[in-house]
Length: 170
Image 1 (cartoon, rainbow, N blue to C red):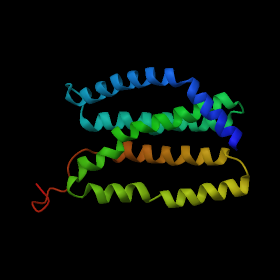
Image 2: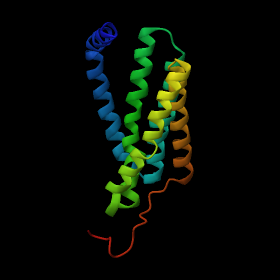
Image 3: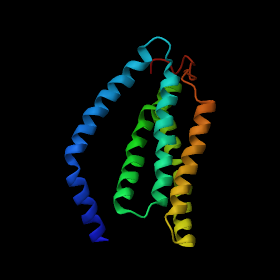
C-alpha cells in the first residue's frame, strides 16, 4: 500500500500546475454561480438544484466509471473528478438548510449529514467483506447519491419554514 500512496503522490505532484489552472477556472465558475441568483429569471432553488445535479449526479457517474476501470491513471482521474465534483454539494443541498430554517440550521445540518452515514459505512464494509470488490461500494455511492438527488429535485424548496415569531431575529 505504500507503493500505491507514493504513486498517487507523484501523480498529484506532476499535476500541480494543472491544479492551479483548474482552481483559477473554478474561481471564475464560482463567481458565475454567485451571480446566478441575482440575474432575472433564476430563483435560488433553481441554482441550488443545478449545483446538486453536478454535485451528486455527475459525481455519481464518475464513481461508477471508477468501479469499471482497470487503469491506474484512469482511476486517479475518475476518483478526483468524483470527489472534486462533490464540492458542488456545498452550493446545493448543504446551504439549503440555512434557507429553510436558519434558526436551527446547525441541528438540522448535523442530522442531515450523519443520519444515513452510519448505515452506509456499515453497508460498504459488508459489501467489501462479502464481494471482495470495490465495484459494489462505488455502486452503493452512486445509488445513495442518486436517491438523494431525486428527493432533493422533487421536494427541495428554498422558502423559510420556521416563521414563528419566537425564531425570527435570534
